[in-house]
Length: 426
Image 1 (cartoon, one colour):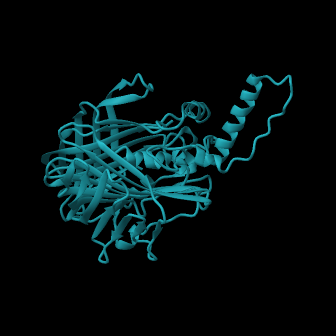
Image 2: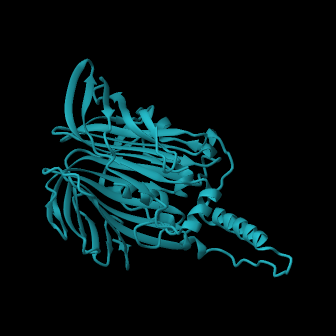
Image 3: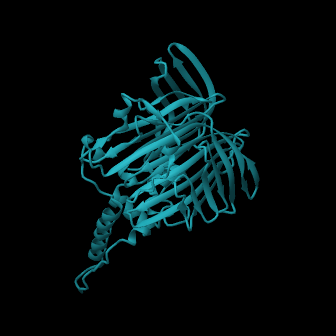
């Protein structure tokens, strides 16, 4: 979705044609020609007004920037499934690329934590606009433990495609291969000289989806939904390999997490706000993905995630909460940037014991602030903000905090490294 890259991808990939940021001009390919009457009494102001309203309407038609208020009845959340089936363990067949033939963004992304303290991301993004235009992107990011500026690379892919069984992805200079036994991925990319990627990410505990199938559906007729959302997790992974940058090779031997996600509709219609948490401790891992819908779907909150350790899911489901305990207004955009948080997981173990886990504390200085619209020309950026009501920003943090878990009265505490994103879209 998702690393600002994950969420940038899921927010803006439907309008991306290349470079490091979204570009609205892909949408212009679908616009009908505009005709402004040529009259000596037509002022430039009036012409500008016509142009603005035309662009606003065309943008709404193509990118879906305006929606009626359907209310909460128009969303069928995975939360309801999880009340009876908290989670389902993943099988190999769950991890095929869907390659949906309608507007959607699909990603496979790998979050990495090296033994030396580097945090990394490797991600393949595939998107489709209206079943007419597709695009693919490879993204990588390195966050350095010594506080130097992060390295972020994003490259449009050419000649991309999928294996016949939809388990693997390939493009010029890039491959994402799923092993025959379904236990590991190999990720290779030579798409950017700034970051050459060669990684192996192996599942070290069962994967899971919340509920029976992990899917939240959007639409007024549950039998004919017009949109969907799901996230599939490998919460505990072993990582080997490296990323080679112009300043040297970084060994990413260590731990990681894998997420396969689909937003099967226009991304900013699905989620107006997001919280993402990845915790890696010596023994335990935790993951949380929360989105809040726009008002068109009743500002509904969906939160999926779980706690795991090597070889075992402790508990998982959709009864979790993400709370920004303290925030400060970002003068740049007026979004409430979190400064103190509380993330809570609630569920039952396989043997029926009540279980909770909490990560809480100060986030410290942000690692990054990603302006999703950063590379859109100023005039277009202003138009989009007015027409769509969107000003997407992603706040990233990498604090060290404690996971405090209670299982039927038994307390477990473990300190670990977090990668946190708070995303505000509209």
